[in-house]
Length: 101
Image (cartoon, rainbow, N blue to C red; front, side):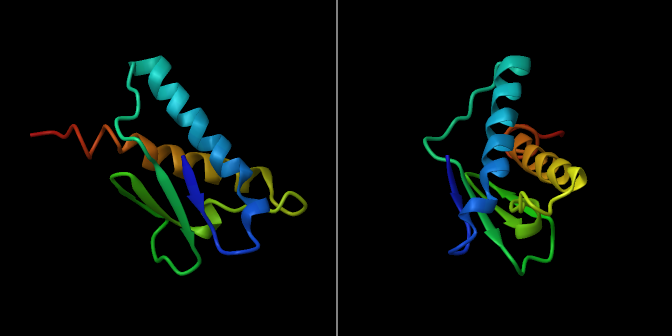
């Protein structure tokens, strides 16, 4: 698992990594789905016009859905990070590998 942020923002990223690990664990325990690549990357960018995009193996996120300052972030901020990271991770199976016909 790799998470890329702008220099100086790494201290704001631990909740994003925790959220990703929790999402992966939930998928494994609930559906028996283990991640199928050797690497999974998250990139946080300030100027991304959507919340996130679930490219296979490389997910691009607006920074507000990855970074949280422990001294100012609200419960909603943490919940939004967890929701969006989980949502994009779950697209690994539903949408990217398995789809409706």
